[in-house]
Amino acid sequence: MSDTPIDIIGGGLAGCEAAWAVARQGLAVRLHEMKPLHFSPAHTLPQLAELVCSNSLRSDDPHSAVGLLKEEMRRLGSLLMEAAGATRVPAGKALAVDRERFAAWITERIDTHPLIRVVRGEVREIPPPGATPVILATGPLTSSSLAASLAALTGAEQLAFYDAIAPIVDAESLDRSAIYQASRYDDGPGDYLNCPMDRDQYLAFIAALKEAKCVPLKSFEEQKYFEGCLPIEVMLARGDDTLRFGPMKPVGLPDPRTGRDPYAVVQLRKENLEGTTYNMVGFQTKLTYSEQQRIFRMIPGLGAAVFSRLGSIHRNTFVCAPEVLFPTLQCQRRPDLLLAGQLTGVEGYVESTAMGLLAGINAARLARGLAAAVPPPDTAHGALISHLTRTEAKHFQPSNINFGLFPALTGKKIPKRLRGEHRAKEALESLSRWQAEQQLPVA
Ligand SMILES: Cc1cc2nc3c(=O)[nH]c(=O)nc-3n(C[C@H](O)[C@H](O)[C@H](O)COP(=O)(O)OP(=O)(O)OC[C@H]3O[C@@H](n4cnc5c(N)ncnc54)[C@H](O)[C@@H]3O)c2cc1C
Image: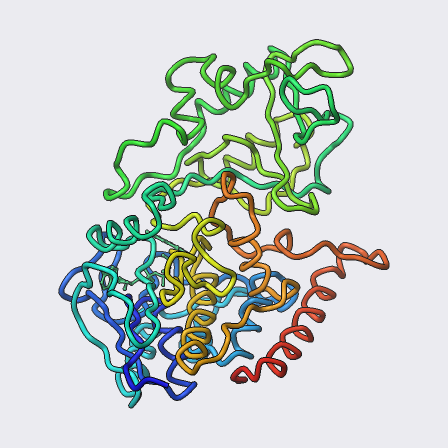
Protein backbone atom coordinates (compact mmCIF):
# COMPACT_ATOMS: atom_id res chain seq x y z
CA MET A 1 0.00 0.00 0.00
CA SER A 2 1.37 3.40 -1.01
CA ASP A 3 1.85 6.28 1.45
CA THR A 4 0.94 8.77 -1.27
CA PRO A 5 -2.32 10.52 -0.38
CA ILE A 6 -5.35 9.99 -2.58
CA ASP A 7 -6.03 13.19 -4.52
CA ILE A 8 -9.66 14.28 -4.59
CA ILE A 9 -10.40 17.22 -6.86
CA GLY A 10 -13.39 19.31 -5.82
CA GLY A 11 -14.40 19.98 -2.23
CA GLY A 12 -18.14 20.06 -2.85
CA LEU A 13 -20.73 17.58 -1.63
CA ALA A 14 -19.26 14.52 -3.32
CA GLY A 15 -15.62 15.48 -2.76
CA CYS A 16 -16.08 15.96 0.99
CA GLU A 17 -18.02 12.71 1.30
CA ALA A 18 -15.35 10.86 -0.68
CA ALA A 19 -12.56 12.38 1.44
CA TRP A 20 -14.31 11.26 4.61
CA ALA A 21 -14.87 7.73 3.28
CA VAL A 22 -11.18 7.41 2.33
CA ALA A 23 -9.98 8.79 5.67
CA ARG A 24 -12.34 6.47 7.58
CA GLN A 25 -10.48 3.60 5.96
CA GLY A 26 -7.23 4.95 7.37
CA LEU A 27 -5.77 6.47 4.20
CA ALA A 28 -4.48 10.00 3.64
CA VAL A 29 -6.28 12.45 1.36
CA ARG A 30 -5.37 15.66 -0.44
CA LEU A 31 -8.63 17.50 -1.13
CA HIS A 32 -8.27 20.20 -3.80
CA GLU A 33 -10.83 23.00 -3.81
CA MET A 34 -10.62 26.10 -5.99
CA LYS A 35 -12.73 28.29 -3.65
CA PRO A 36 -12.18 30.95 -2.39
CA LEU A 37 -9.58 31.74 -5.09
CA HIS A 38 -12.06 30.97 -7.87
CA PHE A 39 -15.82 30.59 -7.62
CA SER A 40 -18.08 28.87 -10.11
CA PRO A 41 -20.99 31.06 -11.26
CA ALA A 42 -23.26 29.43 -8.66
CA HIS A 43 -21.00 29.08 -5.60
CA THR A 44 -20.66 31.97 -3.16
CA LEU A 45 -19.50 30.58 0.23
CA PRO A 46 -15.78 30.06 0.95
CA GLN A 47 -16.53 26.84 2.84
CA LEU A 48 -16.53 23.30 1.47
CA ALA A 49 -19.73 21.35 0.71
CA GLU A 50 -21.87 24.27 -0.36
CA LEU A 51 -25.52 23.71 -1.26
CA VAL A 52 -25.79 26.05 -4.24
CA CYS A 53 -29.56 26.45 -4.45
CA SER A 54 -32.27 24.88 -2.31
CA ASN A 55 -31.45 24.01 1.31
CA SER A 56 -33.49 20.81 1.12
CA LEU A 57 -32.16 17.27 0.85
CA ARG A 58 -35.72 16.24 -0.03
CA SER A 59 -37.98 13.70 1.65
CA ASP A 60 -36.86 12.00 4.82
CA ASP A 61 -39.64 9.43 4.55
CA PRO A 62 -37.68 6.15 4.85
CA HIS A 63 -40.11 4.52 2.41
CA SER A 64 -39.44 7.04 -0.38
CA ALA A 65 -36.57 6.38 -2.79
CA VAL A 66 -34.59 9.44 -1.70
CA GLY A 67 -35.32 8.73 1.98
CA LEU A 68 -33.98 5.22 1.48
CA LEU A 69 -30.85 6.54 -0.25
CA LYS A 70 -30.18 8.78 2.74
CA GLU A 71 -30.71 5.91 5.19
CA GLU A 72 -28.25 3.75 3.23
CA MET A 73 -25.72 6.59 3.36
CA ARG A 74 -26.13 6.88 7.13
CA ARG A 75 -25.44 3.16 7.43
CA LEU A 76 -22.33 3.53 5.30
CA GLY A 77 -21.01 6.24 7.64
CA SER A 78 -21.85 9.36 5.62
CA LEU A 79 -20.33 12.60 6.90
CA LEU A 80 -22.88 14.73 5.07
CA MET A 81 -25.85 12.90 6.56
CA GLU A 82 -24.36 13.46 10.00
CA ALA A 83 -23.91 17.15 9.14
CA ALA A 84 -27.52 17.34 7.93
CA GLY A 85 -28.74 15.87 11.21
CA ALA A 86 -26.68 18.39 13.17
CA THR A 87 -27.78 21.46 11.19
CA ARG A 88 -31.37 20.49 10.41
CA VAL A 89 -34.13 23.11 10.19
CA PRO A 90 -37.86 22.30 10.44
CA ALA A 91 -39.28 21.43 7.00
CA GLY A 92 -42.12 18.97 7.52
CA LYS A 93 -41.26 15.60 6.03
CA ALA A 94 -38.23 16.98 4.21
CA LEU A 95 -34.68 17.02 5.52
CA ALA A 96 -33.67 20.66 5.17
CA VAL A 97 -30.60 22.28 6.65
CA ASP A 98 -29.19 25.66 7.55
CA ARG A 99 -26.96 26.01 4.51
CA GLU A 100 -24.18 28.05 6.16
CA ARG A 101 -24.03 25.94 9.32
CA PHE A 102 -24.06 22.80 7.16
CA ALA A 103 -21.06 23.97 5.10
CA ALA A 104 -19.24 25.27 8.21
CA TRP A 105 -19.85 22.03 10.14
CA ILE A 106 -18.42 19.89 7.32
CA THR A 107 -15.50 22.24 6.68
CA GLU A 108 -14.53 22.08 10.33
CA ARG A 109 -14.64 18.27 10.40
CA ILE A 110 -12.61 18.00 7.19
CA ASP A 111 -10.09 20.70 8.16
CA THR A 112 -9.38 19.09 11.52
CA HIS A 113 -9.15 15.48 10.35
CA PRO A 114 -5.54 14.35 10.75
CA LEU A 115 -5.58 12.35 7.50
CA ILE A 116 -7.12 15.05 5.28
CA ARG A 117 -5.24 18.04 3.93
CA VAL A 118 -7.22 20.68 2.05
CA VAL A 119 -5.33 22.37 -0.78
CA ARG A 120 -6.95 25.55 -2.02
CA GLY A 121 -6.50 26.26 -5.74
CA GLU A 122 -7.89 25.36 -9.14
CA VAL A 123 -6.69 22.10 -10.63
CA ARG A 124 -6.49 22.75 -14.35
CA GLU A 125 -5.70 19.26 -15.59
CA ILE A 126 -6.42 15.72 -14.48
CA PRO A 127 -3.21 14.53 -12.80
CA PRO A 128 -1.32 11.77 -14.63
CA PRO A 129 -1.54 8.23 -13.25
CA GLY A 130 0.42 7.86 -10.03
CA ALA A 131 0.83 5.55 -7.07
CA THR A 132 -2.75 6.02 -5.81
CA PRO A 133 -6.15 6.56 -7.41
CA VAL A 134 -7.53 10.03 -8.11
CA ILE A 135 -11.14 11.10 -7.62
CA LEU A 136 -12.65 13.81 -9.78
CA ALA A 137 -15.60 15.49 -8.04
CA THR A 138 -15.73 18.96 -9.54
CA GLY A 139 -19.45 18.97 -10.13
CA PRO A 140 -21.85 20.33 -12.73
CA LEU A 141 -19.93 23.61 -13.01
CA THR A 142 -16.44 22.11 -13.35
CA SER A 143 -13.99 24.84 -14.34
CA SER A 144 -13.41 25.01 -18.08
CA SER A 145 -9.76 23.95 -18.28
CA LEU A 146 -10.40 20.86 -16.18
CA ALA A 147 -13.53 20.07 -18.22
CA ALA A 148 -11.37 20.25 -21.36
CA SER A 149 -8.93 17.80 -19.76
CA LEU A 150 -11.82 15.44 -18.95
CA ALA A 151 -13.18 15.75 -22.49
CA ALA A 152 -9.74 14.81 -23.83
CA LEU A 153 -9.80 11.69 -21.67
CA THR A 154 -13.37 10.57 -22.35
CA GLY A 155 -13.67 11.85 -25.93
CA ALA A 156 -15.49 15.17 -26.37
CA GLU A 157 -18.69 13.46 -27.49
CA GLN A 158 -18.98 11.73 -24.11
CA LEU A 159 -19.04 14.95 -22.07
CA ALA A 160 -22.16 17.10 -21.90
CA PHE A 161 -22.37 20.72 -20.74
CA TYR A 162 -26.14 21.12 -20.66
CA ASP A 163 -28.76 18.99 -19.20
CA ALA A 164 -31.92 18.86 -21.25
CA ILE A 165 -34.27 16.76 -19.23
CA ALA A 166 -37.61 15.50 -20.48
CA PRO A 167 -40.31 14.47 -17.99
CA ILE A 168 -40.71 10.86 -16.92
CA VAL A 169 -44.14 9.43 -16.26
CA ASP A 170 -45.16 6.37 -14.24
CA ALA A 171 -46.50 3.62 -16.51
CA GLU A 172 -49.32 2.77 -14.12
CA SER A 173 -50.74 6.28 -14.36
CA LEU A 174 -51.20 6.13 -18.15
CA ASP A 175 -54.66 5.71 -19.69
CA ARG A 176 -53.83 2.94 -22.17
CA SER A 177 -57.23 3.22 -23.87
CA ALA A 178 -56.10 6.52 -25.42
CA ILE A 179 -52.60 5.30 -26.34
CA TYR A 180 -51.24 2.86 -28.92
CA GLN A 181 -47.97 1.03 -29.25
CA ALA A 182 -45.88 1.51 -32.43
CA SER A 183 -42.45 2.44 -33.70
CA ARG A 184 -42.22 4.80 -36.65
CA TYR A 185 -42.52 3.00 -40.05
CA ASP A 186 -42.50 -0.33 -38.28
CA ASP A 187 -45.04 -3.11 -38.77
CA GLY A 188 -44.16 -4.91 -35.52
CA PRO A 189 -45.61 -4.22 -32.09
CA GLY A 190 -43.20 -1.27 -31.70
CA ASP A 191 -41.20 0.02 -28.78
CA TYR A 192 -42.98 3.33 -28.21
CA LEU A 193 -46.26 4.31 -26.67
CA ASN A 194 -47.96 6.97 -28.77
CA CYS A 195 -50.39 9.58 -27.52
CA PRO A 196 -52.26 10.79 -30.61
CA MET A 197 -53.82 14.26 -30.98
CA ASP A 198 -56.35 15.52 -33.49
CA ARG A 199 -56.11 19.09 -34.83
CA ASP A 200 -58.27 20.64 -32.12
CA GLN A 201 -56.35 18.91 -29.35
CA TYR A 202 -53.05 20.06 -30.85
CA LEU A 203 -54.19 23.67 -31.19
CA ALA A 204 -55.47 23.71 -27.60
CA PHE A 205 -52.17 22.19 -26.43
CA ILE A 206 -49.95 24.73 -28.18
CA ALA A 207 -52.22 27.61 -27.07
CA ALA A 208 -51.70 26.53 -23.46
CA LEU A 209 -47.97 26.07 -24.01
CA LYS A 210 -47.60 29.59 -25.45
CA GLU A 211 -49.17 31.11 -22.33
CA ALA A 212 -47.31 28.91 -19.84
CA LYS A 213 -44.88 30.25 -17.24
CA CYS A 214 -41.21 29.32 -17.56
CA VAL A 215 -38.48 29.16 -14.93
CA PRO A 216 -36.26 32.25 -15.41
CA LEU A 217 -32.72 31.55 -16.61
CA LYS A 218 -29.78 32.21 -14.31
CA SER A 219 -27.26 34.67 -15.78
CA PHE A 220 -24.71 31.92 -16.42
CA GLU A 221 -27.33 29.86 -18.21
CA GLU A 222 -28.09 32.53 -20.79
CA GLN A 223 -26.44 30.57 -23.52
CA LYS A 224 -27.54 29.29 -26.84
CA TYR A 225 -29.21 25.89 -26.71
CA PHE A 226 -27.91 23.05 -28.82
CA GLU A 227 -30.25 22.58 -31.80
CA GLY A 228 -30.66 18.91 -30.85
CA CYS A 229 -32.10 19.65 -27.42
CA LEU A 230 -34.22 22.76 -27.77
CA PRO A 231 -36.92 23.20 -25.15
CA ILE A 232 -40.37 22.61 -26.63
CA GLU A 233 -41.47 26.18 -25.82
CA VAL A 234 -38.45 27.58 -27.73
CA MET A 235 -39.34 25.37 -30.71
CA LEU A 236 -42.95 26.51 -30.57
CA ALA A 237 -41.88 30.17 -30.63
CA ARG A 238 -40.57 29.49 -34.17
CA GLY A 239 -44.03 28.62 -35.50
CA ASP A 240 -47.23 26.74 -34.66
CA ASP A 241 -46.24 23.67 -36.66
CA THR A 242 -42.64 23.37 -35.43
CA LEU A 243 -43.55 20.77 -32.83
CA ARG A 244 -45.48 18.74 -35.44
CA PHE A 245 -42.27 18.62 -37.49
CA GLY A 246 -40.17 17.93 -34.41
CA PRO A 247 -40.88 15.83 -31.32
CA MET A 248 -44.62 15.60 -32.09
CA LYS A 249 -44.15 14.40 -35.67
CA PRO A 250 -46.99 11.96 -36.50
CA VAL A 251 -45.61 10.59 -39.81
CA GLY A 252 -45.20 6.81 -40.05
CA LEU A 253 -47.22 6.21 -36.89
CA PRO A 254 -50.72 5.24 -38.05
CA ASP A 255 -53.23 4.88 -35.24
CA PRO A 256 -54.50 1.27 -35.44
CA ARG A 257 -57.99 2.50 -34.58
CA THR A 258 -58.22 4.75 -37.69
CA GLY A 259 -55.45 3.36 -39.90
CA ARG A 260 -54.25 6.97 -40.41
CA ASP A 261 -51.41 9.05 -39.01
CA PRO A 262 -52.77 11.35 -36.29
CA TYR A 263 -52.42 15.16 -36.55
CA ALA A 264 -49.68 15.14 -33.93
CA VAL A 265 -48.30 12.58 -31.53
CA VAL A 266 -46.41 12.53 -28.24
CA GLN A 267 -44.13 9.51 -28.00
CA LEU A 268 -43.25 7.75 -24.76
CA ARG A 269 -40.13 5.60 -24.57
CA LYS A 270 -39.40 3.03 -21.87
CA GLU A 271 -37.13 4.56 -19.27
CA ASN A 272 -36.12 1.24 -17.72
CA LEU A 273 -36.03 -2.37 -18.81
CA GLU A 274 -39.09 -3.22 -16.74
CA GLY A 275 -41.20 -0.52 -18.38
CA THR A 276 -42.44 0.91 -15.09
CA THR A 277 -41.62 4.46 -16.21
CA TYR A 278 -41.67 6.22 -19.58
CA ASN A 279 -39.75 9.20 -20.92
CA MET A 280 -41.63 11.86 -22.92
CA VAL A 281 -39.46 11.86 -26.04
CA GLY A 282 -38.04 15.28 -26.95
CA PHE A 283 -40.08 17.09 -24.29
CA GLN A 284 -37.24 18.91 -22.56
CA THR A 285 -38.62 22.14 -21.20
CA LYS A 286 -38.08 25.09 -18.91
CA LEU A 287 -41.76 25.40 -17.95
CA THR A 288 -42.35 25.62 -14.22
CA TYR A 289 -43.17 22.28 -12.59
CA SER A 290 -46.80 23.23 -11.95
CA GLU A 291 -47.26 24.34 -15.57
CA GLN A 292 -45.74 21.09 -16.85
CA GLN A 293 -48.18 19.05 -14.80
CA ARG A 294 -51.15 21.15 -15.93
CA ILE A 295 -50.25 21.24 -19.64
CA PHE A 296 -48.87 17.71 -20.09
CA ARG A 297 -52.03 16.30 -18.56
CA MET A 298 -53.85 17.73 -21.62
CA ILE A 299 -52.09 15.06 -23.71
CA PRO A 300 -54.41 12.11 -24.49
CA GLY A 301 -53.57 9.22 -22.16
CA LEU A 302 -51.80 11.51 -19.67
CA GLY A 303 -54.90 12.96 -18.00
CA ALA A 304 -54.00 11.38 -14.65
CA ALA A 305 -50.25 11.17 -15.26
CA VAL A 306 -47.97 10.85 -12.24
CA PHE A 307 -44.57 12.28 -13.08
CA SER A 308 -41.57 10.68 -11.42
CA ARG A 309 -39.44 13.48 -12.85
CA LEU A 310 -40.31 16.77 -14.52
CA GLY A 311 -38.41 18.45 -17.33
CA SER A 312 -35.63 21.01 -17.00
CA ILE A 313 -32.63 22.51 -18.76
CA HIS A 314 -29.60 23.86 -17.01
CA ARG A 315 -25.84 24.03 -17.17
CA ASN A 316 -24.51 20.65 -16.13
CA THR A 317 -21.22 18.98 -16.90
CA PHE A 318 -21.54 15.19 -16.83
CA VAL A 319 -20.19 12.18 -18.68
CA CYS A 320 -22.15 9.69 -20.75
CA ALA A 321 -21.73 7.20 -17.94
CA PRO A 322 -22.68 4.01 -19.85
CA GLU A 323 -19.76 4.70 -22.23
CA VAL A 324 -17.30 6.12 -19.72
CA LEU A 325 -17.68 4.41 -16.34
CA PHE A 326 -17.46 0.97 -14.85
CA PRO A 327 -20.06 0.22 -12.13
CA THR A 328 -17.28 0.89 -9.61
CA LEU A 329 -17.15 4.55 -10.79
CA GLN A 330 -13.71 3.93 -12.31
CA CYS A 331 -13.17 5.42 -15.77
CA GLN A 332 -12.99 2.71 -18.40
CA ARG A 333 -10.09 4.45 -20.13
CA ARG A 334 -8.21 5.10 -16.88
CA PRO A 335 -9.25 2.79 -14.05
CA ASP A 336 -7.10 4.68 -11.53
CA LEU A 337 -9.39 7.69 -12.05
CA LEU A 338 -12.80 7.58 -10.35
CA LEU A 339 -15.58 10.05 -10.93
CA ALA A 340 -17.86 11.20 -8.14
CA GLY A 341 -20.85 13.47 -7.71
CA GLN A 342 -22.95 15.00 -10.40
CA LEU A 343 -20.17 14.51 -12.98
CA THR A 344 -21.05 10.81 -13.02
CA GLY A 345 -24.49 11.56 -14.45
CA VAL A 346 -26.65 11.46 -11.36
CA GLU A 347 -28.83 14.45 -10.51
CA GLY A 348 -29.32 16.10 -7.12
CA TYR A 349 -27.52 16.86 -3.88
CA VAL A 350 -28.18 13.52 -2.23
CA GLU A 351 -27.41 11.42 -5.31
CA SER A 352 -24.18 13.37 -5.96
CA THR A 353 -23.11 12.87 -2.35
CA ALA A 354 -23.91 9.15 -2.55
CA MET A 355 -21.67 8.85 -5.61
CA GLY A 356 -18.94 10.56 -3.56
CA LEU A 357 -19.35 8.01 -0.82
CA LEU A 358 -19.01 5.08 -3.23
CA ALA A 359 -16.05 6.65 -5.04
CA GLY A 360 -14.32 7.19 -1.69
CA ILE A 361 -14.94 3.62 -0.57
CA ASN A 362 -13.63 2.28 -3.87
CA ALA A 363 -10.59 4.56 -4.17
CA ALA A 364 -9.49 3.41 -0.71
CA ARG A 365 -10.09 -0.25 -1.61
CA LEU A 366 -8.05 0.09 -4.80
CA ALA A 367 -5.23 1.84 -2.90
CA ARG A 368 -5.22 -1.09 -0.44
CA GLY A 369 -4.99 -3.60 -3.28
CA LEU A 370 -8.60 -4.78 -2.93
CA ALA A 371 -11.14 -5.09 -5.73
CA ALA A 372 -13.54 -2.18 -6.00
CA ALA A 373 -17.08 -2.97 -4.79
CA VAL A 374 -20.42 -2.55 -6.55
CA PRO A 375 -23.58 -2.16 -4.45
CA PRO A 376 -26.40 -4.63 -5.13
CA PRO A 377 -28.96 -3.37 -7.68
CA ASP A 378 -31.86 -3.58 -5.22
CA THR A 379 -30.28 -0.92 -2.98
CA ALA A 380 -30.72 2.76 -3.77
CA HIS A 381 -26.98 3.09 -4.34
CA GLY A 382 -27.05 0.08 -6.66
CA ALA A 383 -30.08 1.42 -8.52
CA LEU A 384 -28.19 4.65 -9.28
CA ILE A 385 -25.18 2.65 -10.47
CA SER A 386 -27.47 0.56 -12.71
CA HIS A 387 -28.87 3.75 -14.18
CA LEU A 388 -25.35 5.04 -14.86
CA THR A 389 -23.98 1.92 -16.42
CA ARG A 390 -26.90 -0.09 -17.79
CA THR A 391 -28.87 2.61 -19.62
CA GLU A 392 -28.59 2.66 -23.40
CA ALA A 393 -25.89 5.25 -24.07
CA LYS A 394 -27.79 7.18 -26.72
CA HIS A 395 -30.71 7.77 -24.34
CA PHE A 396 -28.63 8.45 -21.25
CA GLN A 397 -29.78 11.42 -19.15
CA PRO A 398 -28.96 12.31 -15.53
CA SER A 399 -31.47 11.05 -13.03
CA ASN A 400 -32.58 11.53 -9.46
CA ILE A 401 -33.12 8.37 -7.46
CA ASN A 402 -36.59 6.90 -7.96
CA PHE A 403 -38.05 3.43 -7.61
CA GLY A 404 -38.25 3.18 -11.41
CA LEU A 405 -34.46 2.62 -11.38
CA PHE A 406 -34.80 -0.47 -9.15
CA PRO A 407 -35.27 -4.01 -10.49
CA ALA A 408 -38.93 -4.92 -11.04
CA LEU A 409 -40.69 -6.43 -8.05
CA THR A 410 -41.11 -10.14 -8.52
CA GLY A 411 -43.18 -12.71 -6.66
CA LYS A 412 -46.36 -11.81 -4.88
CA LYS A 413 -48.22 -8.66 -5.85
CA ILE A 414 -47.69 -5.91 -3.32
CA PRO A 415 -50.32 -3.18 -2.94
CA LYS A 416 -49.04 0.15 -4.28
CA ARG A 417 -49.20 1.92 -0.91
CA LEU A 418 -46.90 -0.71 0.64
CA ARG A 419 -44.35 -0.92 -2.15
CA GLY A 420 -42.01 1.78 -0.83
CA GLU A 421 -41.86 0.10 2.55
CA HIS A 422 -41.25 -3.29 0.92
CA ARG A 423 -38.47 -1.90 -1.31
CA ALA A 424 -36.82 -0.11 1.62
CA LYS A 425 -36.82 -3.23 3.81
CA GLU A 426 -35.31 -5.38 1.05
CA ALA A 427 -32.76 -2.70 0.18
CA LEU A 428 -31.50 -2.30 3.73
CA GLU A 429 -31.20 -6.06 4.19
CA SER A 430 -29.31 -6.27 0.92
CA LEU A 431 -27.05 -3.40 1.96
CA SER A 432 -26.21 -5.11 5.26
CA ARG A 433 -25.31 -8.35 3.48
CA TRP A 434 -23.11 -6.40 1.06
CA GLN A 435 -21.37 -4.54 3.86
CA ALA A 436 -20.62 -7.82 5.62
CA GLU A 437 -19.47 -9.64 2.46
CA GLN A 438 -17.17 -6.84 1.35
CA GLN A 439 -16.10 -5.89 4.89
CA LEU A 440 -17.20 -2.33 4.23
CA PRO A 441 -17.20 0.35 6.89
CA VAL A 442 -20.44 0.59 8.87
CA ALA A 443 -21.81 3.60 10.69
C1 LIG B 1 -27.18 26.22 -10.20
C2 LIG B 1 -27.44 24.85 -9.67
C3 LIG B 1 -28.46 24.66 -8.76
C4 LIG B 1 -28.72 23.37 -8.23
N1 LIG B 1 -29.72 23.23 -7.35
C5 LIG B 1 -29.96 22.01 -6.80
C6 LIG B 1 -31.00 21.86 -5.82
O1 LIG B 1 -31.65 22.81 -5.43
N2 LIG B 1 -31.22 20.61 -5.31
C7 LIG B 1 -30.48 19.54 -5.71
O2 LIG B 1 -30.72 18.43 -5.20
N3 LIG B 1 -29.50 19.65 -6.64
C8 LIG B 1 -29.22 20.86 -7.21
N4 LIG B 1 -28.24 21.00 -8.16
C9 LIG B 1 -27.56 19.81 -8.68
C10 LIG B 1 -26.45 19.17 -7.81
O3 LIG B 1 -27.08 18.41 -6.84
C11 LIG B 1 -25.50 20.11 -7.13
O4 LIG B 1 -24.82 20.82 -8.13
C12 LIG B 1 -24.48 19.37 -6.25
O5 LIG B 1 -23.79 20.33 -5.51
C13 LIG B 1 -23.50 18.50 -7.01
O6 LIG B 1 -22.55 17.98 -6.12
P1 LIG B 1 -21.04 17.77 -6.58
O7 LIG B 1 -20.28 17.40 -5.38
O8 LIG B 1 -21.01 16.88 -7.75
O9 LIG B 1 -20.57 19.21 -7.09
P2 LIG B 1 -20.39 20.55 -6.22
O10 LIG B 1 -21.13 20.48 -4.96
O11 LIG B 1 -20.66 21.68 -7.17
O12 LIG B 1 -18.84 20.54 -5.87
C14 LIG B 1 -17.85 20.73 -6.83
C15 LIG B 1 -16.71 21.51 -6.17
O13 LIG B 1 -15.59 21.47 -7.04
C16 LIG B 1 -15.00 22.74 -7.08
N5 LIG B 1 -14.28 22.84 -8.35
C17 LIG B 1 -14.79 22.94 -9.61
N6 LIG B 1 -13.80 22.92 -10.52
C18 LIG B 1 -12.64 22.81 -9.81
C19 LIG B 1 -11.28 22.75 -10.19
N7 LIG B 1 -10.89 22.79 -11.45
N8 LIG B 1 -10.34 22.64 -9.21
C20 LIG B 1 -10.70 22.60 -7.89
N9 LIG B 1 -11.98 22.67 -7.49
C21 LIG B 1 -12.94 22.76 -8.44
C22 LIG B 1 -16.16 23.70 -6.92
O14 LIG B 1 -15.75 24.95 -6.42
C23 LIG B 1 -17.06 22.96 -5.94
O15 LIG B 1 -16.79 23.31 -4.60
C24 LIG B 1 -27.94 22.26 -8.69
C25 LIG B 1 -26.93 22.46 -9.62
C26 LIG B 1 -26.67 23.74 -10.10
C27 LIG B 1 -25.57 23.92 -11.10
